[in-house]
Length: 568
Image 1 (cartoon, rainbow, N blue to C red):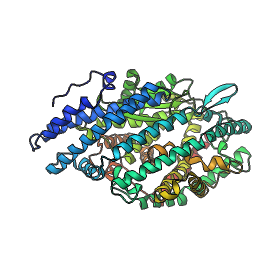
Image 2 (cartoon, rainbow, N blue to C red):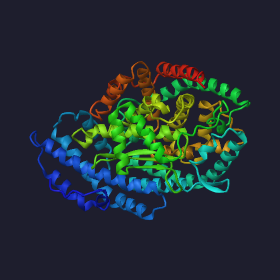
Image 3 (cartoon, rainbow, N blue to C red):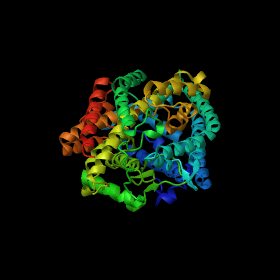
Image 4 (cartoon, rainbow, N blue to C red):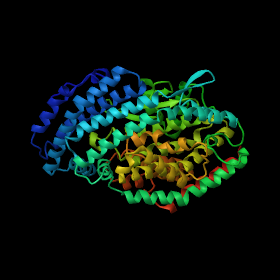
């Protein structure tokens, strides 16, 4: 295939559709046979790598600085002028391969995914997807601009999470109220964006011939292994197996803190009245100690992480006009991930960077697969890679093994990790159940007032231990502050399912750390060449939605918390 490859990333970000078109035209003209299909796939894989990395680089530029007008313009130009051409051309090549009846080795699952994607592809949806991406950028700008004045200095939303760890309850309350008041200022603008999101998604589903957006999105996400009803069963399992445990942990926390009711700003503080964990002073220390931990888990993982650091492929510190959250994306052409985070000096930053590192290792391990189309595992397992790494890394948090803490503080950190996981499942159920309600009732959910009501109902169902009295408006608008609901609809149950898979990996690691790590790595190497349940199986665990499996995981965590408390 005749195509002039870019010399580097800076050259690639200047590419337009004209740079891709000759390669796609050549592949489209070729007659596929058993003799040339692998070479043909190699050419298509190269084009996919280039297009994927271009999109990733342009998106990264908008998130590392949400106020960068040039980056925003470049990304908009890509979405408007290059993305449509690539999307249509990829669709033609999918149709060509599917029509050929050829099935290259290791391509059964990618072909199944392609059939689903090809079935719902519509050219009419490309302009809608462009508009959706513009909305994502606008939402990022709104969230990235949210700051407050704290002790005379301008502080980001992420920084204010450090205040929630302060032992003085009055200080925590003051900080949280200040932040919540600022976030509510954007309530109406986010509501307007929400109505635009809903309108676009309803149109996409209709264009694709689907009865509703959920069925469209389910197929778009290639969810072959489970259904919406399985998700609802998982919600019920969480209500049955996890919510009572959270209630027990809450009662213990209230007693330790000497309070009658638990407010949101009481969740993160150390209940034993010890000072907040301060694992590092700056991003450089964070990166170096996480690297040391990875080298302990498996030397090749440490080498992978170090390569990102040396190449400048991480942006870790928090700052104003930086998109919220954290992510790992792939620069597919150069075969290297990029890690984005917002570190402010709390233990959650440690867990977040370890989490994103797990994603990066997944990418590194799949680059060995010959074709781009084989490398992207279902998100349900991609999150096992990240969440599993958080728990596999936990034995090395102590300073004696290169980590951050004394033995006592490492025990505190692990208790925080485990309690966070347990509390997460009910929150995940709120987010996922909310999205099912949204797209089952689009005529109601397009009105943000109804979304507020639904979120309130779910809060009371899954987090009855939290006292929101006096803060009802903050509580009911919780859906506005969960980016996944806006950016990536239905992308959240993956975290809950993956966390259960990761908990099983951790159980295996408590019995044999080396074996658990090796199984974990072998599963990462499979990319998407086997079905989702088989990926879990390769890691030595199972994909599950039931209260029994979930209950066993939570029981182990609660038991471990009790053991760790004796070390404090």
